[in-house]
Image 1 (cartoon, rainbow, N blue to C red):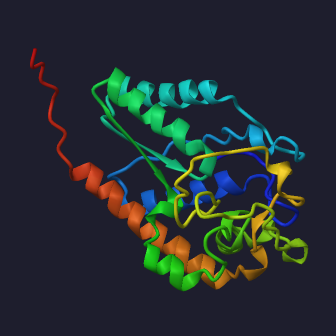
Image 2: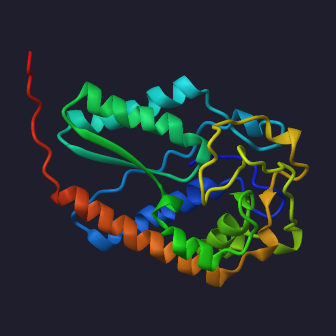
Length: 237
């Protein structure tokens, strides 16, 4: 996860709270077939630094840090290592970290962001925010998830709709579908509140549906990795 602003209604801990609580529930479900490490709470988010409370780790430092966690596990005999991500901007760096585990050890490293484990059909059925551009940050989806997991950390009286980034044919911000153009810019250039989306549409019921689905699928993924055979490398020179 990471520590960063999530508008006036959600806590700075949103991304690591969601990732850690979802992971804990999935690992408990399949125990003892998987083990869970303590959460890595800080991540890459320089683009949120214009908003108070954000803690930013430079990209290369983050790659090295996360890769070395996986490589340490590999040295201790773990051969299947999964990074579970709760922060969108961590993805490219965690992908490289997972590849470093594969390239520099005999272990298998992989990455999954929790929202990617929700089927597209279910996302479209549960979330009503406009598409694309309505589900991005401190939005209907994230707010619903935290309402379900940690309602004590949410103040819905301060939730407002803010979609300052205007979607186009080629560029948008939406966790339900990837923009063909990959980009990131300083958040304060388009958002007055730090929100991108409409958290006023969030409910506990939506959060339960989405989170429970993720936990089911993450538990299934863990069992799939446990059962999967990874053959040794072969030098064909």
